[in-house]
Length: 91
Image 1 (spheres, one colour):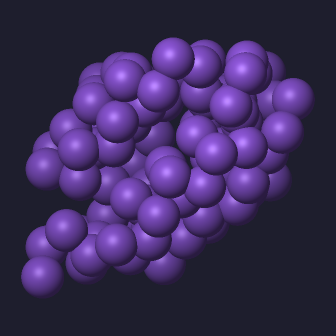
Image 2 (image 1 turned 120 degrees about the vertical axis):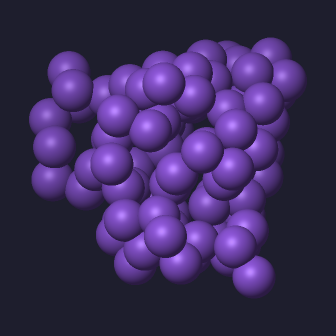
């Protein structure tokens, strides 16, 4: 399963607005995507298309997270999702 590390760019972290943008994109890609903090075990990964899971992750500005995807187009999906996380949606 391909993985990609992304850094949270939104100034107040992965709160409601950026989480909603990210969850919608993750759900529209047609691949299963998970997210977890760097250093957390794989079994702690959360569903990246769930806004509640994303907000529960509590990822803050500057924190690194690991995205993993499974399915056709997984690499492209990870690139697109990392770009969303690495954009400051609070600007």
